[in-house]
Amino acid sequence: MKKEPYRVNLPESGMVDYWYNVRVDMKERHDPYLNPGTGKPLKKEELLPVFCAQSVEQEYNETDRHISIPGGVMDYYRTFRPSPLVRAFNLERELDTPAKIFFKFEGGNTSGSHKLNSAAAQAFFAKEQGLKGLATETGAGQWGTALSMACAFYGLDLTVFMVKISAQQKPYRREVMRTYGAEVIESPSPFTGVGKRMLARDPESGGSLGCAISEAVERAVSTSGVRYALGSVLNHVLLHQAVIGSEAKRAMEQLGEYPDVVIGCAGGGSNLGGILCEYMAERLSGKSKVRFVAAEPSSCPSLTRGKYAYDFCDMGHVTPLAKMYTLGSGFLPSPIHAGGLRYHGMSPVLSKLYHDGYIDKAVAVPQNAAFAAAKHFARAEGILPAPESAHAIAAAIDEAMAFKERGERGVILFNLSGTGYFDMAAYAAYNEGRLTDHIPSDGELEQGFAGLREIAANAGQESV
Image (cartoon, rainbow, N blue to C red; front, side, top):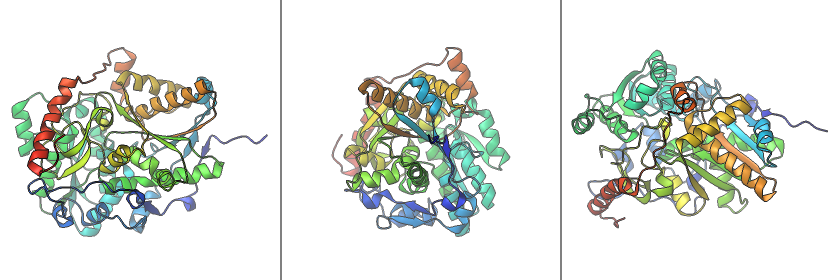
């Protein structure tokens, strides 16, 4: 009897050398970005003072299904890619489920997450453009760490505005960034106009990704030779993360397997967008009936309780307007430990796919349930997952138990996007029973939605 492998490690020769652009295969594209001042579609040249020129080109690319990965990016990818596909045999046995559970493990690099896929690309573009540095934000710290590594590799300066509560919860993540040469500033900070306004309103504010984005954009556009880099949400970021799903599909094909359900955690969209990409292409073309599940935190439920509307991508309203599922750019999430998911909106691409029914389900996972799933997974599979990834694990366990209850065999694939070794304060709080679940009330959400109506009126859009 042939023994099934625990993991598939694609050889370097099996690396994908392209990024798959799901927008080409979408039945309808997402609505255009809008200039908040005019209410008209944003032109590419309006983004050039903010982002690297090549990132802007990719952001607007709706024609090229496969975009070749530049050699300079492939040189860096070879230091940490391809990542393994792993069969969770022990978890399956403990759950006593007839389902097969696979996960793509993206936490094997020093940043501990999938974020390095886009960080490498954006830093390379900055270097090729002759820039001296980048500015960015980070929540839990995975993106900031990844971009710190990439900027060190390509010889660029980097300023990271780190959400204050995350900087306090994860001081060692901050030190990794500094070790790679980044300047790390807690957000909200007294060094930008946005930060000063936030602190004037609430001197004890723990911050949010929306606020940190505003500060990073302000720093980038006001500093010569510097551009802004974003780790999630936008089209070019999802494009870079598509290597996850492309590699996963190749590895699954080696095993003769095809998933019935694909799962990713969902904050801004890079994690989910990365794992679903090429499977979504087959769903869109009618070749597959694979289901897609987005797992988000119940404390920041943009897909499950948000509005599909135009909104700013940041709290300080310095970014363009994007049509997405959102809680309102003024929504301030509770300080959960899954800092990478503390974002008010969802990727326009994923929002459109969800709105049109191609992402089949979104589930909101309470913080304690996510950590319970993380602990179960760690004990079974020997990998300590990041709190963000734990949401996908919780959803995968639920899907596995649903197969069991129906008496059906099935194949589950989820993205284990990062490790939790910098999140021990969170695990300590869970183990000691101090971790709390905050589910925003309808009244709390309404405060964010009120801002959406004002934005719609100013931009000449239908009210939400």
